[in-house]
Length: 128
Length: 164
Image (cartoon, rainbow over all chains, first blue to last red; front, side, top):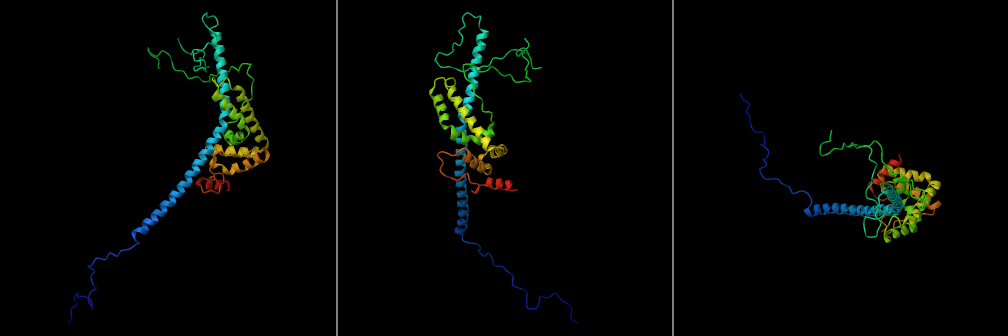
């Protein structure tokens, strides 16, 4: 009577891998460095194109402002002169009875005209 | 209440603007002002520069050479203003639709000239045809920024937006 036993298969087991199996894969490192360098160079080239374009666009913007500067400055000058003469008139009216007042006499002695740096308004709302 | 012994005045903010409405004295001739806002002025800036270059340079030279600046150069300033007004009037008479499209685009794109090339091209063509004014960037080294086919991220988006 043959009993069933847990025997190894016929022909034996497969061989066990006990040696290390580390195949070296991939390209050699210089090729990878070359690929990275090529991508970097492409990026730097794109960057330089963009920087040149940014410089020209800044030039364009600056020249637009240069062309517009006299128009705006002339308008501001007219407004400043208007306020200057208005301040002179206001001072004349306020100080007309004062004996020591000279109309339009400058505070500074350098011979140049100075635009008014303060604006005096009517005092209508403060509680005294 | 923020009044105290040391600060007796109440803070007050006025519901209106205080303006000094006195006019210029009558010995100074009056001139109509350029009423344009910033976008139309930016759009027309190169055409103003092309036509008004002598007056602009005259004015800036006068300002830099005079002792008092503002008062001495009022006449040159009037000339500058009148020239700018003439440029804007001519553009509005001949090329109003292209002009409005371009400065409308500038209003939407943060006054970035490089984002409005598609609207700038017909305006430049119309002004060159009717007013003989060309947009010239002095001292430019030739890098193409005016052509919308050049490689630029914004140009592709602008092109796609306009070809919807």
